[in-house]
Length: 284
Image 1 (cartoon, rainbow, N blue to C red):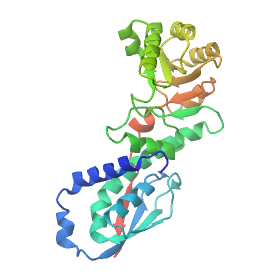
Image 2: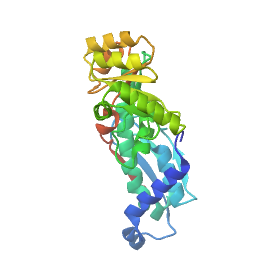
Image 3: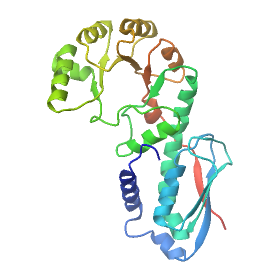
Image 4: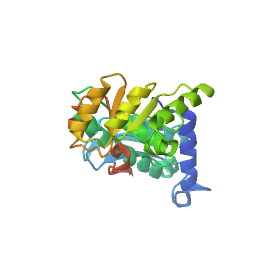
C-alpha cells in the first residue's frame, strides 16, 4: 500500500466499521454460529480495472486475524464479468461484518481506477502527466487518490496544506498576480515552508504577469482553447512547469497534451467516476 499511512488507514477501517456495526451485527449474531469458518469469493460482474484488493485483505484480517486470503487478480489489473478477484477464508461472522465496507470501497475505487486507466491509455506514448484534483469525497480523499494511482495516473496536492495554488479568487481578493506571488514568498519564508507554487492564469496577459514576477513552480492554464494553450506553452518555453485544466475529457485530453503542456489536471478522475459491480458470495 504505497503512499498510505497505516495509522490513517486503520482508523478509517475502525470508523467505517463502527458506522455500520456499532454494538453488533445483530442479524449475523442471531443466525450464524460464532465458531463457523466459511470461504467467500469476490465475484466481478463488470468490466474495468480492479482496485481495493489489498484494502479488502486488511479489513478481513482486522476482523479475524486467522483469515486466509488468496489474491487471484491484483490491484491495477484488468477484470471482466465472471472473474474471481480473491478468495477469503475466515470466521463467518467476520465475513458478514466486513462485507459491505469491502464492497462499497472496492466498487468505488475500481470505478476510479477504471476511468484513470482510460485517461492514462490515451497518453501512454506521450510525456504529459495526468493529475487528479481535490474534487473528492470528504474523508475518502486518500482512498480515492490511492485508486487514481492504481489506475495509472498521478496525484496532485493532497490538500490545501502541501502545495500553494494561487487561483483566480486568490488573485481577485489580493489585487493582482504579482501581489499574490510576493505575499506567498513572504509567508513561506516567515513560516519556514518549502512548498511548490502553482499560479492559475486566465489569459495571455496573466501569463506574462507571472513570467515577469517569477519565483513559482508551475503555471496552470485554466480553460484555454487549444490555439491559445499552444501559444501559452511556447511563451513559457520551459522556464516553469506548465499545466492545463478545466473541462478535460477523454475525447480532448490527447489534443491538449499535444500542445506540449507538461501536466493535465482532470477532476473527472474522481468526481465523475462510477462504481464497478462486484459481489462477495459465501460458499455453501
